[in-house]
Image (cartoon, rainbow over the protein chains, first blue to last red):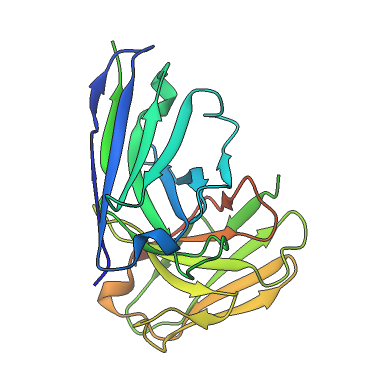
Length: 122
Length: 108
């Protein structure tokens, strides 16, 4: 069974940094594109970033480009999101998601973690 | 950027009724469209991909249709566990990947 567990969320001041982690299990992590999707309190879903299974292709939403960095460690079955220069509008629950089809980058998210809450406030 | 618009924002229905949710794309996404269900306090769940293919384990009462710019999710007979928020998402032309604003299906 696919299992994704996010960690690293918390309260941070504007301008601060956080590093989110997602521990994956139950599937061959190295063959799957992984993503971060966030949801502000009471709001809808917003795609944040994707990293291809190969690690070669990386994409960001304009709202986080230049501030967030996605990475993966296939040996550790882990996905990361380094978030710098955080703003109040980054406050959200951050979900780690997996693409449904291996060795592709189709962006059908068939597995989601439970999410980790990031709150940016002074 | 492809803008996804869902309607209505809220659908008040009774159990057993048929629910029809709409999703419109600002430009053609072919059939590269997914539907997700989200219940309070839970992560979203993939229901439909490729506009009309049910994901693993999704009951047959959920059906998706459409292509191009107009899409529909139908729940043929609402069960108590179906009252939730539903999001559409396009993956035809990205980045960015874009979601609709959601339709909340609530108990009438």
